[in-house]
Length: 104
Image 1 (cartoon, rainbow, N blue to C red):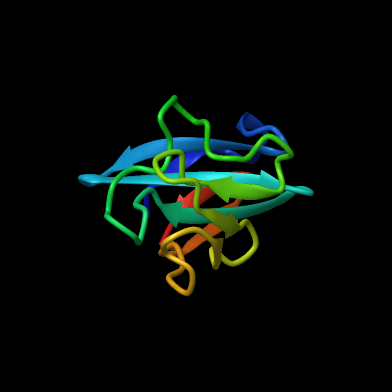
Image 2: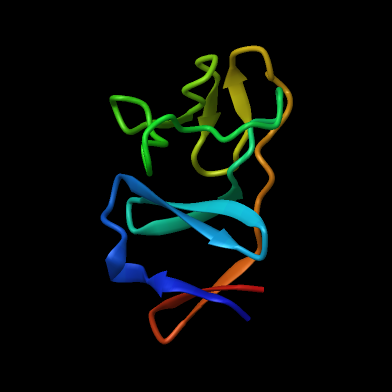
């Protein structure tokens, strides 16, 4: 299992990206809960952010694809607006052990 970071390394209402085994993934922390996704827009397969770790909209309510404005629900990755409606982000399985976020 790959350790990404400690849960306290990610602030609430923020996200952090990681390169793991030729994949770019990101972790979102919202209300103390963690959500891990592949950093790839289901519309055209490119990274979601223009600036490093800038994954959330201005209100910190949704994951935003900076390339074409698609919005994704943080809790489940479902696309609710934009050209990829109905195409969710790919969730990455993980666990938290001793405060460390680990990929399965």
